[in-house]
Image 1 (cartoon, rainbow over the protein chains, first blue to last red):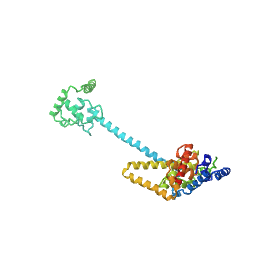
Image 2: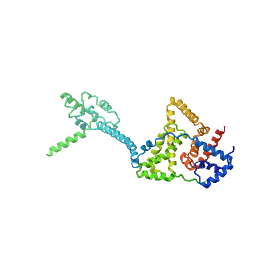
Image 3: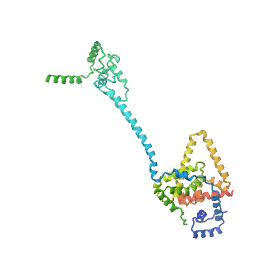
Image 4: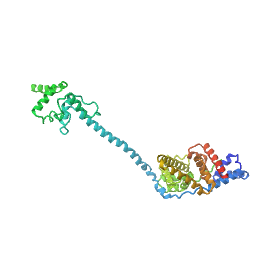
Length: 213
Length: 183
């Protein structure tokens, strides 16, 4: 059987089968179909396709409608998604804050002057005095803290870490005997890299004040 | 050729307004009106399982974004478009699952083929087998045109193509079905 060459009519056949055409269109189409075996066969095939449609599975309408939020709550229903998205930046913020604290505290430990560190009685520093005085503090916080004493010890081999456990001149030297203290002071005097300006200026200003009064 | 407008088009619009005004029964009437057609389209498109979940997801998504529904197409067309996208998402997910679980791939494919065959056998019709044998695009266009009675413009919107291309797909599908049936 040959297909009809009238594409317009063939295009309209599904609409005819669905009853979507106007009365005049139905009349015109019906006249054509009566005289066209191809269109008759095609219309019969279309009706067979419709008859053989697979049965729709049972749908629980009430279950579906109960899943639909009321109009006013539709916007609220989308809320949790946005809140979940906000958790990630908050988590990053907490981590960033923790990292910042670690860097600041670690960096402060490495770069603080000896007097300041010595005042921190709760955390006795482990590096010897010459770490601060003789060797520059590590420029980067990434440098491991344990390396600072090694550099310092290399520059000032006389003072051993276990002999002088503190950087502090106030608290760290309290446990030293007179002989050890004497030795320490003499070693300090022998180190060329010891900056003399800072302690001297403090001393001078005190003396000047004393002289003035 | 001018098509008679579907009688439910204005009613859909009215029901949407009623639902937005707080009448939940309007949503029920919309679901009652379109659920079966959506389920039937899903089955004809090759969906095998969880049809009701698919239809439910379609309605939930549609009602959740009714504000963005501009009414340029009918609600029915819009619902079919949403369902079509959901089916595509499902198929992509199934493909990923099959790709990531190589041990089960053979079983999954065998089961899929068996279901196709079973569906064709259960239909007890050469017409049904002919439709199953069509390419996915041809099958969708053919089903929407013949079973749902949609226009080429509506079909083009749903399957994401042009009106002219939808027409070509339909006639190619019709020729293939005829050849299959006459064999």
